[in-house]
Length: 310
Image (tube, one colour):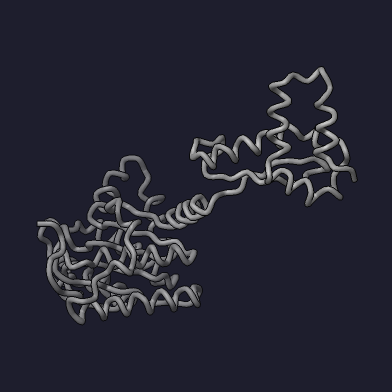
């Protein structure tokens, strides 16, 4: 095959090509990346391919110059790469490493479903969790990392969750959110629900007949975290027909479930579940709920200083 650049240069020397165009073409043909590409693929290309592919070569050089000069490109976040396509020179736009990282992060975030949770929960990580204060935090962290490893290795097996309780602001929600993010990175879907807010949402959904749909989305998620459970008084309907239905389904289908609460399991049963928002005492119904909580989770205490801004 003849030298493609030389052949096209001869064509351009004819009078019908204006000087400005010739300058543009010469700049393309003198571009080191273009010359290297044409030389590398000379056995694959016909003699007139440079002429027929000039618009693509020109586009490639222009986009590369923008990148070198830190100027906005036609397709931000993607770099132009010359390729051979059906005998012609073409451009493939490949994502930069930053774009790849952002795409990966976006894919991870899609696996985390948050219901009435703070926006920043998707940005926390396990390495941000402070282990220095006491052994309670170390123990909780150890159980979380064990769960992540076991669940990642055998996601189809039954893995018991955790009932994480302790005072306000010790980092229970933070730890659960960090766990959720790590599981999402490993390819698993996780749903975090602020339960008091979800209960209000479910009451509002009655009029629009959306209770069943919203309930299904929560109860069927592979890993569920019910945050701040017991923070507000609970009606019998929320306890039995919302929480009870969620826990029953997850118990029957062996789905990993986590809870955070300011109450121990005993306190949650006796001081919260057993007394509805009207003051009625219903210990048997409370025990029924707690049987499911005990099956689904292991009670873990986490205590220490209040880390929330005062």
